[in-house]
Image (cartoon, rainbow, N blue to C red; front, side, top):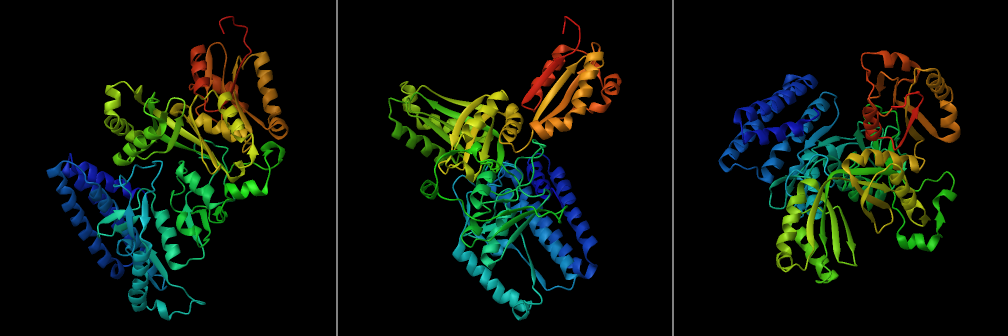
Length: 568
């Protein structure tokens, strides 16, 4: 079932304050898993599995009960408990396969996949956080364990005796979970099942990996924030990793790595639309050296039909940490100590920029790590701050990173200019700019409230979608206003086809009532008079119209006054 990980997280969190609530949450999780199990297989298959589920629940309850004594949640506890969702799911699918008369078995990845985690990467990770990397498989030990399983358990199941030209076994492997070299259960962090899939694809020499999602592949942008976004047919491994790192949640940041050496293609497809081909990820981008040797710089707009970027993505809930005025200390020493302090504190640095003129450094970090980053810097530069040889250390929260990604940026001029100009026209203030050394991405930091508008503006600027204009028509029910609305409606297709402009009426009304759209698609232009007369319409207020237009996520906004009112 969906949301099992979140439900198990609630079990752990609630155990600190209300053990009865934790018990109830756990019961809900276990009973829902058992209910699904019994729907898919007969009792002679499900009875032993149900017994294991209930035994697991008792173990979980014992673990979380001890949390009240220490009044905290150790990282390993959260990882152990949340991992049971995948373990139960794998056994449930295996139970169903047993009813289909196919050779099958299931693997608890904690017995096979051995990993090491970088310092500061303990715990489950925040849902939807920027990076879930930092976990690396110990390939030699993992491969040995995989081979041993195949030659023992697989042999016992008859997998070695099958004629693979006629029939192949189905092996269900738990995603997300793993173990450390010391035998301690751990996880691949949030969304880690994608990583599990590509790891086991490499171990077994798979010819392809298919990731079934609830979207039609990898999109040019988040369709929830950019309705005009569309699926990308194909991208390179490097582009996929950049998109994933900068917030494209349909992919895990590390999931491409195991497939690169063996050139295993990764397909991202929609479980609810299986006939759609989705996105295929394979191949490497050219290195900067290769690009420099094979081409010359050209403006990207001169290559008609070729868009230099593949996607636009964002990382929300970020913060900027800045150290200013450290020129007295010396740039190299400042950078070394700055980043050393971040490493020692386990801070996930998303972006770094440095101003050499005054040895100032700014980094972008996850918002929940911002305060800890400032404290780490204050400790590292305590002496300099007491002597006033450092100007200040500051924290700016409520930020979002917006990044454009694509192999076509290299040796194409004008890409950054197009990006920055689009944000300027959308009135998005840029707090920080950074370009990756690979020339495959350019990232900016903007206020979180401007992130959706920035995404849509950039998406339109690179002709990834038609330019959408939000129009507020004041006096839309009058003679002139109604004529204008009819003209906009009649020329809608012409504007879109010939000029690449899509007009949507975001607000319309007369001197007494105003109807305001609740989303970026605008009001129904064919029924504006009825909408203005409806109960949903509000009393006319010019400040309300202004507030509506300022909050509109469409970067291009126009107010047309067709009234004869001096007040308007």
